[in-house]
Length: 386
Image 1 (tube, rainbow, N blue to C red):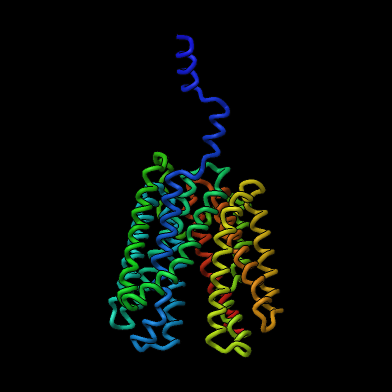
Image 2 (image 1 turned 180 degrees about the vertical axis):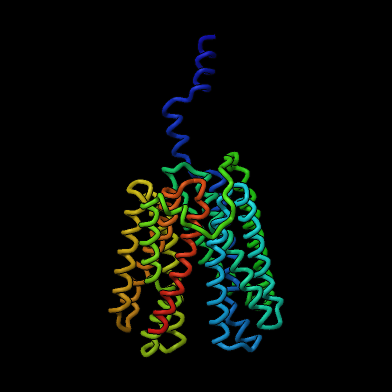
């Protein structure tokens, strides 16, 4: 009887060791669900992205100028959608619906591009897909913070970034295989399958969320001042992220730099192939760096990892600026940039999850995503003009 009583008492009052184990557990089925959703969604949307130029210019007779205009318009509206999606995601129940609806809508709109027979139809579907994608991002990030303890935010966001980067690697490879088998249009249409599987993965993850805590209902408003008024550290981090993103040149321009440097010695076709292999190395390095960066973020704090990541970017850009027409001088530049993006993206998300108040976490992630989006547009536009 005494042993049974002790056992019941231990179950009712967990030991300190048991509490520590529960506190350290972060790779739960819910986190797996969100990570798998990121992987499948990227796998799906990278197919129409990889084939977008071929469809517009090759099949529909559009120009490079129209292609650039559509990409810029879609990215700009996606940035606005991220800010609005964050404000909507402040309410815990609503953020769940936005996440599921955003993944499903992105998959359907992007896949229907394969059935379009006019440039204006492609434009509407592309914009619709990117707006839906923008709406879902803050909701997904806020849901991930709901699933793990605060001392494991870095690991959770590192895992999600790793899965996202793996999808970015697999998507173009999937596009190549599908085009070889079924052609461009059917390949784009088939991209709906991984996209819808991503929505199902989010539904699976929702089963493991804690019960919704009833925060005071905040009406939808584009006023983000209340979020920042009493959060000096959050303001400082967002300002730093904004300055960084305004100098973070998009990867396609890095590929262009490598291609232009190598073309005189290798020829255009070989230089293009080498540039794509270097970009693959960039994505692989980013995937490998994300989870260790998350662990370091939990140990040292996300701001330390964020500063280390920006330092790696500075070194990478110095390598690009000093590179001559040599593959071996470009390799460390791409690997450093991949290492940097793995660390920066992970630590940015962990920092926002840590510093934002839980009842306004959606708004904080929406503001972060909007800053990232518009900063990238500014950086790439300036670099392209230069």
